[in-house]
Image 1 (cartoon, rainbow, N blue to C red):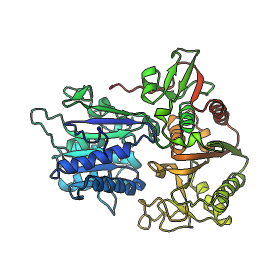
Image 2: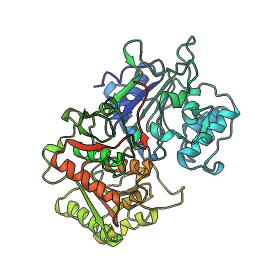
Image 3: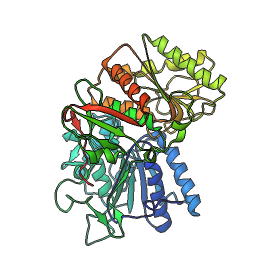
Image 4: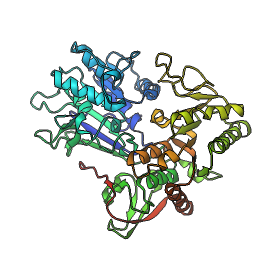
Length: 485
């Protein structure tokens, strides 16, 4: 059964802001499927960035279509990577092909990943006017496609979003600014920059775009949807993730985060206290906003942190814990046990060796086969594959977005701790922590101030799992307040 928001088709842009695990992908898939049912002649694109998300999106759409009792015309509703690859079409490549414009690749830009696509999208927009090709474009992981670097902006607008917007037909010739660009995001999962896909960032400040996301459309259709209920990550872990990511217990003050009661409420918290320097703030996450029930019946702590002195110690502890889950507790690791590394790839590649010594089958996400180290040859890699039957998946944080598991092990926290004043690094840790549906174990080498923060947070939520209190030391280094309400 579809939620009310799923079967509302806006006549123009719509933004979906949701915390980790709130069901943003599910909502987008249901919106896309409903559009396809109601308007089978429309050309619809579902756009994403993390390759490993493809199968999840495909299954979500397939399941929703079946529930609606319709067949899926994949020529009319396409799942598209934002860029594309030598194996598969993407939004950028399709737009280039339709305009007889030579599509460029990573070798044609000095930037990497999403920034590279933004650079090429800017060049495309500069070189030619884009003819509308789609009736609706829905963008998942929207936070990964916005950047602060002014060299990547097109006329002070986000280039990738403006490329997508330019490729849309307008449903109302009298209001050409109205085009169905719908995007979902979580600003705390942005591991590339701390830009926010706001209306101002995407459309600029010129009329008629300035207030394009303010208010409602006819039929009581919101221009902004806020999703503050978390269905995936247990409440105490989500609270800990926010506290650590934002630096609530950082001795020098918060690194990032909201500066108003309203913004915290948008994240699903009840707030006591005032946001004045030196004042105490208490944040409580009510049960209606944390829907994972495991908090109420777990027999051992949901979250743990164990620093280690050297690599062998860290990875031996990891292997022992996973061995116990598989061979003592009889847990099949497929889609249930996930190891995420935040450290450099060379260290992450050695995790498999320690699992292998314990007789544990492992799979590096995107590899052609199990029980082998990561493969570099892009023609052999399978970036859409994240899990293998009967294997523990090992992945770098960049590969894991959108995926989840019952037991998540996060290793290499020292890589974050060495740069603990950088919001992108903390966002990486936040994203890793919120992959869990059940239990979380974290580890890292050495001794860093961040570790003391983590222990302080765990102590705080250990006493009151749904609450965290801290002293507000003034405006964070990166205040995060979103303007459109």
